[in-house]
Image (cartoon, rainbow, N blue to C red; front, side, top):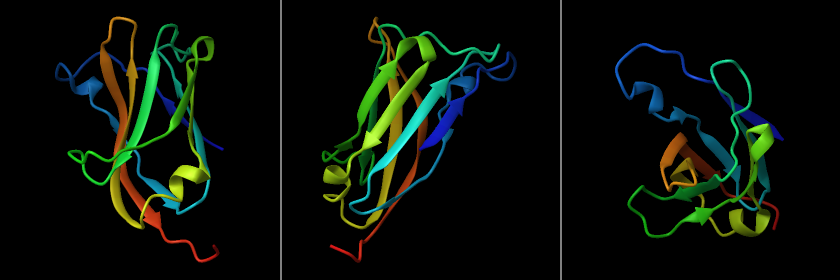
Length: 128
């Protein structure tokens, strides 16, 4: 399983720049299980307290598409970790091609922050 760590941001630079999502591209082999963990840390390298947060991670053909392929996200608040899983039952329904994805957290006050975004490449399976 892959781990992605989002480091805390240091002061400086234009206001808002530190809030832009990090870019990570995903590669999926159609029908394969894709799990990864995201750990969020503060500037002291300690896990963020994610108590009261919910997570969402989606793949779409374009950002405007109505069809979304949503991962199962499980938040572990004290660890600052979110387990993201795209099960085989979901990835088998995605046609080979190019897509986009993002990962967002929503706090208890309904404030949303997008931490990751990127392109997705889905390859066709041979064995069925």
